[in-house]
Image (cartoon, rainbow, N blue to C red):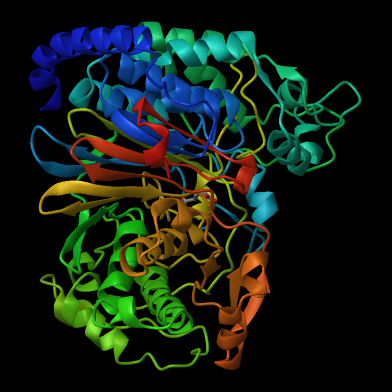
Length: 601
Ligand code: GLU
């Protein structure tokens, strides 16, 4: 395990870092820039959507922490500054390259449905609730996995305590952070619902019920105290005791004002559900792609299997030599057919025998590729039959779900690496922007609405609601190895379009000769087995857009798809950390020791 091996290294390494920094400062060496979306250098790196989080991760690395420590530190800060996209009220998935073992592993910190839930939990009078009614309720709240994830990864793979990791988050929650345009816009989306919930209104709305203005400082002393309790007592301060009681109360009796203008349905979570929560360490998904090894998140996420299947479909095309419009056409079709399979076959593997081996078999990909033409297929296309390629070999009843357009982009992705070669790709979320819309009174955090990721409008589909089950996710933290060593890590937010974003990032970087910053900027296209293909507005004016339209693609503009982050390991200890320059107001990438300006990308 990383920790025991690193224990010896850390002291020596911290000394070395201290000396290097002291010497570097005296010699006037470049230090890591603050805020820009791209940084090149050595000694480790971090990229997130937000400067304070990236800085906290870098500070942890500078003090001798490893990539896991840095990721948890950044996540703590994001839980304060990006409360509508992430936080301790939600869950996530973490993919880790452990340099000491030379292996990739994954941590499933997904939310779990309370034991008392059943396939018809979101139905009333013979019909499923609307998404908004389901979301803004106690029913959509899954047992959160984030605190358990942080504790588990620090214990198994980290070198610092939860107390150290959460210190920057507690500071930011106490001292406050400044509202920017993205925060304002995200608050505005939730305004009507926050207005119903006094604990949410007090934190995020002004007295007149409007969002806090850009430039206002938001302090969250309740969350500071909550995080301090977790720092001191560990996960039991979350999953047991007064916080757990308050969380249960929020779910079972939504804390809305008598003047609420919406109906908030109660949920069924119990203290037993909270106490039973367990993080799962799972094997990653794996495909080889043009001689590289691509590792991702397996079920209950559909990220790894769907990207993996699409890459398998694409591998036989000579993409590097093809015209850009033809490359994009193949990518869209590979995504379309993989999505058809994702919608039919991916669910929590404890409840449904996911034919993962079949879905990731090259032979199976060949059967899907055989259906692809040089024009747009008419969606929805039907799922294939991966069972002949799966050792389990047993065909399950095939019930797909109707193809859906991408949801509102939420969630946040953290990329970190360290000087020892460990790499972390961590996506965490509370599902929709603003989650279920309820802040736990007195504790300062929003609860998730992750259970709407179940196919809750069917009582029979594999991803139907069941007690103790994890809803299918699209989260797709990805690590690519070359000759057994990390080459690249990427991940993104954006609901189901997380998958198409990660696929496009990989195609752009690995097949199209783009640099990682270029790939992250590239206007995105997202084909999720729907009649239209979502594209960012900047794509619409390109020659490729016109070419694709001639081939039958109906392009629909969507303002923004996927504020990604990533890190490329350039060799000889040098790394390139990349965040989003524009989407979501721009992110922040930093390295421990910046390279000279000529090397910056
Ligand atoms: N709930 C989504 C999932 O796990 C992520 C939220 C989002 O990015 O919209 O797939």
